[in-house]
Structures are given as C-alpha cells and as structure tokens.
Amino acid sequence: MEQNIPLQLMIITGLSGAGKTTATHFFEDAGYFCMDNVPPALLPKFINICLESAGKFSKIAVVTDTRSGSFFKDLFGAIEEIKTLGVLVKVLYLEAAEDSLIRRFSETRRKHPLNKGSDRIVDNIREERSILEETRAKADFILDTSSRTGRELQDEIRKIVQEYVSDKTMSVVFLSFGFKHGIPLDCDLVFDVRFLPNPYYIPQLKTLTGLNPEVNEYVFSTEAAQNFAGKLKDFVDFLIPQFLNEPKTRLQIGIGCTGGRHRSVAFAEYLFKNISHENIVSSRVHRDLGR
Image 1 (cartoon, one colour):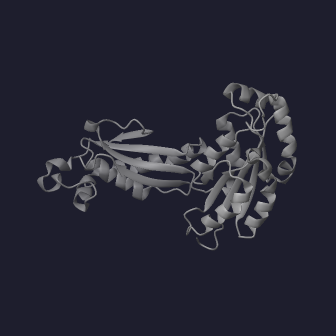
Image 2: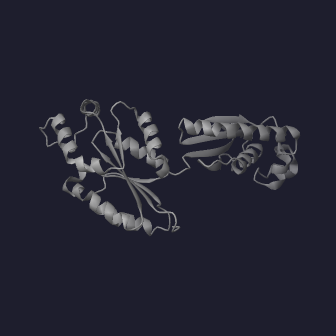
Image 3: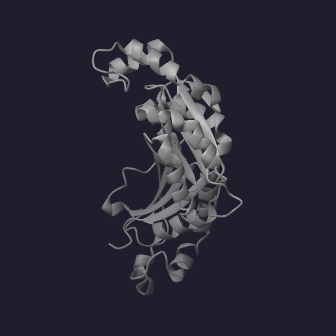
C-alpha cells in the first residue's frame, strides 16, 4: 500500500433494527470490503492482515454491535490500538425512535439480540440504548433513521461521510453484443450501430473482430460513424453526472450490431477509452465476441 494513503476503516454500529445492513450495502457499493458482526477484540488482528495485503484491502467497513455481548465493551480500546497503526478510523452510529424499531422488528419477525425468550421488545430496545450510550457519545457520525426509507438512508450516509468514501462511486460497463443473440436484459441504455457499414462483408475483415486495428479503422472510416461517435460520447458524458446524482452505483451501456463481433466491439472500446469521470470506474465486456 502507498504510504501516503492510509487504510480507511468505517465502523458501523448502533441500535438493532436501525439500518446497519442498509448502511453496509452502501459501503460495499462504494468499494469497501465489508464484514458483519465483528467482535472488537478481533479488529486489530484483522486490520494488521489488511495492512499486509499490499493494498488489496485499503477500505474496510465493519459492523460491530451488542451481538458481541461482553466483548463489545472493548470497542474503543480496539479503536485506539488500530489508530496507532496509522489507520483512519471513523464510527457511524445509527439509531431510530422506539416506535420505529418496534414496528421494524414486528414486520421482520426477527429476534432482538438481547432477547432472552420472554422479554418485551420495548425492554430490549431500552436496554440496548443504555448499553450504547458511551458509543453514541464517541461516534463521529450519528444518524437517526426513524422516518427514512432504505434509499433515503443511503443518500444521507453519502452526504455525511462523503469525504471518507472513495470518489469512484459508480461502475460503468460498456457492453458489446449482437442483436441476433438477443438484447441484454440488464442494460440501462442500448444503442444500435447496425446502420454503419458491416466489416463482416469485407473478406479480409470477416474473421477479425472490433479489437483488430484494421476493423476499427474500417468502422470509423465514414463521416457518419465519426459524427455518431462524437455525439454518443457527448451524450454519455452528459448522462453520467445525472446518474451519479440519482445516486446509481452501476450503469451498463449496451452497444449492439448484428453479430456482436465487429461494429459493436469497436464502439464499446471507443467509449471505454474516451469516457472518463472522477466518480466512475469503467470496464468493457464483449458478450458475443467468441460466437
């Protein structure tokens, strides 16, 4: 790992039923390696393993809470030990109103971690709130999820911890395919390049693909192809910030031609190489290249 980029550890904790699973999904989508129900005593050992991973695990989010039982009281001792390793540690505490928590447990029919069998859920919630008083007082972020949907919770987490989350928050996949093999059902956008001259009918290009320079040159040799490429790039450049604001974590853009081996491949490669944004990680997939 580069020495000037500290490992980031986000500790997610708080009341049971307050949305820790939803928060974990947010950090997972943001590129964090996530673990649930980690006893605090194990955190320093786990972080040491991550520090020795040569940068493979540079952003970590863990959930630790009262499910750890008596081990949970060691949380802030573990945090201080981890900080001595040069790790950037932040604590996100989630809570909700009593009536909201009661309703959520009733809807999911899950057992409260402090429930011993015959307890009232309201008593479990109050006991847990008391146990977590110190944790709440020392947390870097406190978020009340009482009236928030899962989507609203993720939006709020994005706002309050933005500086600790990777800038690259959306995955963009440029997918080439052939219409004769079916339109990919998981594409958010689909563009058709079958109006362009087909290299398949050029004997010396037929057995090649859009990855070959000769095919690429042929596909982009016409004024129509060049104009379309420029307009398509501008359109995608415009759309990406709009999807980021939605917010969306994955965008798949399909480019189709007849067989999925020439024109669509060339255009998917073109977009992959020419679309860049500080808030995306891009990749390309050629679904029908080997058909």
